[in-house]
Length: 198
Image (cartoon, rainbow, N blue to C red; front, side, top):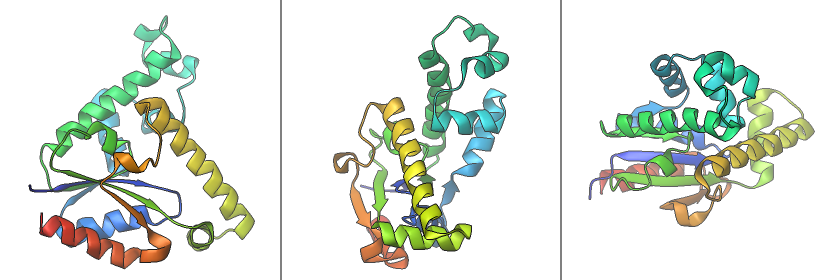
């Protein structure tokens, strides 16, 4: 079976984003993350900030209703679901083109029935993650650890709110990779081997 779609879930600071970028470049695949938000925003005619906000938590009712007055009498669940539904449809459309890597955005859930998708989740020990965030964001170890806790909480909340599934649950992925053990470049090589020999 050909595997030409990779979805990446990751703990903050584990290096999953970097691996995704390197893997896409290595395989000459399209890499979707930030640009996906911009493209979706254009498609449904909202500001990128609203989609980013929906990724973290349900949109505040007054903000959402300024954008979509038709939802004025709807619940916050309906409001947030609109963004997530559109994002899911967009990801499925992009995946139909194949040869792509999705970083986050619950792509593993939206493409859970796609036989050509390889679903990967990256995790790492806290020291490894703290060191990476300190270097990337020029902050102290204490600040890095707090940012990791905050971001992981947001990702978990958003993922579980949208999918009804546990974030980082091994049964939803084809590979669980500990980057603090395997390393960033070795993870790229392992996944490239899987794709090239699938």
